[in-house]
Amino acid sequence: MDTISRKEFEDRLDFEQKVTDAKISALLNILKKTDPKIWEKFANELDEELSKRKISPGEDCLGYRFQD
Image 1: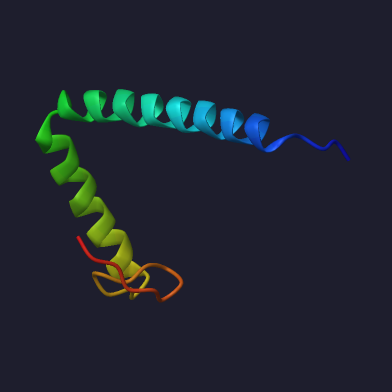
Image 2: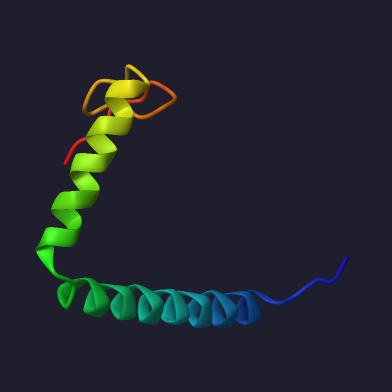
């Protein structure tokens, strides 16, 4: 197993955070340009699928609750 210094670890972590932030920013820019009707259709289809599986809104397939 390789051992790295604290500085190397912090540098790698900083780099990974910058890459992740850039990816998130790119996705947000794409989403901002997306027609809202697509998301409405997606939400409707998701609601239909959840009702088929008897999963209530606000609950995922494992039974966990989530908020908007």
